[in-house]
Image 1 (cartoon, one colour):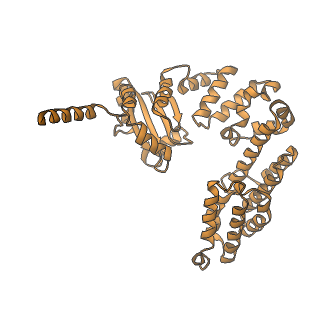
Image 2 (cartoon, helix red, strand yellow; image 1 turned 180 degrees about the vertical axis):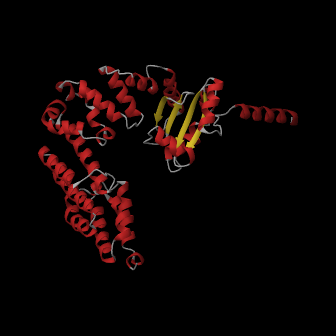
Image 3 (cartoon, helix red, strand yellow; image 1 turned 180 degrees about the horizontal axis):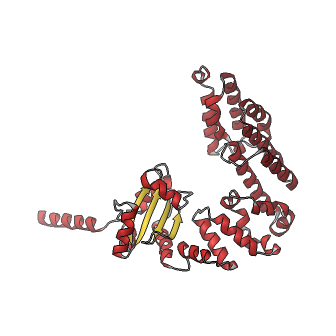
Length: 365
C-alpha cells in the first residue's frame, strides 16, 4: 500500500513538472529577438504595470494554465516587462502603448506582428493570438499594407477597427484616411459611425469632431438624436475634464471660446451642464485658484455630480490657503449631493476628498 502511495505521488509530481503554463524567460528584449531567430519563433511580450488589475488577473489565472502553455511554448519566446521600469519604459514609447495589459507579438527582426489589449479567458486569448499567424488579421500585416499605400475603403475599415481594438493612437490617422475616401452620405451613415463615436479617436484631433458638429442635423436624421447627442456630450465632457486637469498643453482661451460656441450651436439637452463645465475649465486654464474656486462655487449646481472634474483635488490641496480649503470642502460636499446615481463609486471618492479637506490638521498647515 505504501509503495502504491509512493508511486502515485511520483506520478503526480511528474505531471506537475511537465504541465506548465507560459514559460516566461528572463531575457532582455534584444536577447529575446536573437533567441526567437535561432529557434524560428516569434516573441510574445506581456506588457504590464504593477497597478493594473487585469494584468494581475492574466498573470495569476490565465498564463499558468496548461492549455495556454501548450499553445504558447512551442511558438513563442515569451518575456514580460513592467512598462514603468527598465527597458519597459522604452518599449512602451517604441510601440506607443496606451493601455494595459498590452500583449505584443514581435517578429525576430523587431517589427510588430500583432497586438492585443485587455483581459481574456484562456480559450478566447488563444484564439486571438492565433490571428498573429493569419496574414488577413495580423496587425503587423495591415501596417505593412497601409505603409505600402493601400487606401482601399474596405481595407481602411478593417485596419482602423484593428487599431481601435489594440488601443493604438495610430487609429486617428488611419480614420482620417478613411474619412477622406467616404462620400458625404457615407460619413453620416451607421456603417461608418464608429470613426466619429470612438473616444480614443475623437480626443486625438479635431477634424472628425468638427465635421460631426457642422453636419449635426444630417447625423441626427440618419442615426437619431440620442445616439449622436450622447456621443457629443461624452466627447465634450471628457475634453473639458482634460483641459481642467491641465493635460491639454494646446488649450488656450481661444480654444475655450470655440468649444463653448460649438456647444451652444448644437442645442443639446445637456448644454447647461456642459457650459458650466466649460466655465470651470476656462477658470482652471487661467491658473488662478481663487478664480477657479469662485467659478466652481457658482457652477457646480448646474451639473450632475458625476460630471465634476474631481481630480483637481490633487492640485488644489497643495496650494490652497486654509480659508480656501474650507470653501473647497463645501464644493466637494455639494458635488456629492448632486450625484444622480447614489451607487456611483466616484461618489465615495469625492466623499473621502471632502473629509480630507475638512480635516483640522490640514487647515492648520
